[in-house]
Length: 402
Image 1 (cartoon, rainbow, N blue to C red):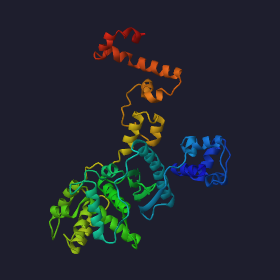
Image 2: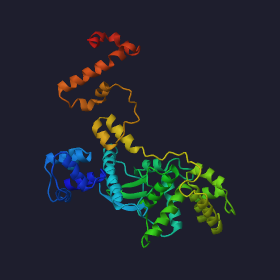
Image 3: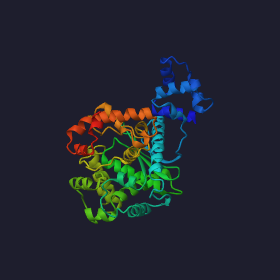
């Protein structure tokens, strides 16, 4: 367990074994690469003092190495460019595994009776069956044929776990799998524009719900693409927007549809061809024009939708507010959870963040100290606020002043 956690922390920190050994050396600690490798393999266990130093080097607390892994993930698909280094792929999987553990722990703490409303293993062997599967999921989630405001929020509302991975190089598209055979997990790039992010997420949902026996990986990807397009824009909607037959479609029209439905111009062109609204000649002509205008990676029209996950932050803040976790645990579960909160409050007010439940667990002298700090912080507010001064009728003001 310690070895697995040690390797996980090193990968998350983006360090090689040589770099870890070098950093320990700067701290006056002698450890060889072979020794570190033996620890990671579980051949031996480092002493507690070394674990503490390793934690500082890798940016984790010492108890991280002793925590039993709570999630087993069966990864289904990893979509990336061929040039992505294997080390980066491993880092993304490791990052996802750690974040999934925290989110599942929170879900089971706050919603122990809830089960994800996302089916698994719907058999698909044709593109038409992929279309039908997308229709089934829409109906099951109550989306019908209306434009989806946020694929991310829809997935989270139905019990899905979605994670973001920064990918400035543009090498990563998506990763999906099932955690503990119960929770569907999707990882998407936070660097992609909203329309591409929602398509990538819909693509991963396709991988999660469909099984394709006897079908090679390339064809499975094609089915997932078809599912994604049909999930975002059902056939009836596409025909209502474009008509049943077109000899030509203007790019300005497709940009407007992109901004309405959150499906890219290029995906709209392919969608029109798949539904036989345009023929192959029109498809190829429009694709060549896309290339000539250099729109393949940066097409016109910005989709204004919101495709950022919020469930983890909401659960973290709820658990903190209810006194189920301390602030340190909140920061571990959701890094940056307090960034949106105004930083104008004086530092001495941090004592007021202690919840009543946690307060009662402290020794009496510590409780009294915190309460004295709270009283001092609220003293001026009591004097200045007319509503609060209404309590003077209780004759407690002298005690408060003292």
